Length: 459
Picture 1: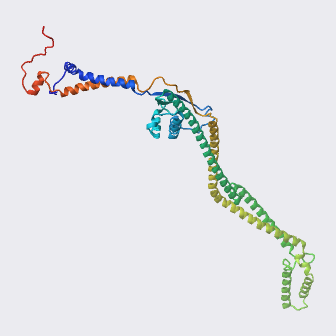
Picture 2 (picture 1 turned 60 degrees about the horizontal axis):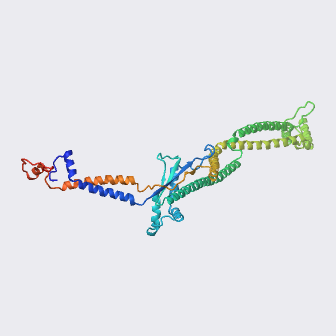
Picture 3 (picture 1 turned 90 degrees about the horizontal axis):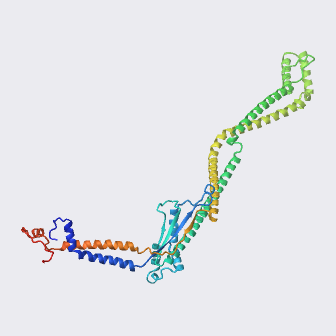
């Protein structure tokens, strides 16, 4: 093209197309013919599909809650990874004798990778965690092999789903059983520690505070009564120690309220005073000497220890004094218990709190363990969520590759694009004059006139 600045209209494009039509027709024919040949001789591939339904749990979830909580997408990914492992695919290849031609030129790993590419797991377009079905597709050159492999894969998916659900249920049950056992052992240890603590500090526990207060009040009342009885006994003993009075009038000599030795000593002192003032024949001196002589002769009578009433009171006083000592000791003991109850309460609070927390944990684990055991039995009896084939793979009648209409349509549009591209390239490389504008743009001369092209022949 020697005049790139020229503007074109529809007639110009038509004229260029007619002038360069061979550049359009030849690429169109070649490309479309190539597409036809490809559609005719390309290797056919057939795809077989198995539709698998996800059946819900047969027992209501309100009664037994399943321990398998993962969604269908997550479980399908896990199962797919397991089934598409090299070991599983090699077993299928050996069992169904797949890829015999490729085995001559390709390595084992390459064949396994080729089979992975031919397997496709399809979920519904509305991909959700609770999708009710999915499809397993397999593509092969042989339609019968495609159907056989698709059915084989569906059975493996069903088996692997049951296996994984049972393993997960068993694993959950075993984990909870282990946690329950360790928690029970810890609960028993804490219970023993709490019981030992209560045994060591029996009587000082916080719940025994009211009882201790009542016992203290009773002991104090008993102690008061015992002290009153002791004072009364001591008073009676004091009365018994007084000697009998002199004469019928009952007059008593000085010092008659003392003991025998004190009375005798007082009488001797009186005698010495009288002897200092009077003679030995003085009536008072003679009388006092007779009294001293009589008291010395009647020593046993004045010995208070021989009085049975005195001995009885003395024993009673000793008994009351012993009871007072015991009551004081018991009062001190209960006061110490009441004062120590606050300390014991603080010490026990941590033990009781820890024991209660462990007990609640044990009860929670026990309930979960029972539910896990029920879920395990549910999976063992195959009453949980399952995969079920509702549309097994059939031998496909039409190939999925190549898609002949699609190939022909692509060949047609490709040929048209190549033809138009050929015309554009040829027109860009053309350096000839086709109109006055080309001459003026190239040579710079003004064209005065031109002779139109005569298409019809002269008569």
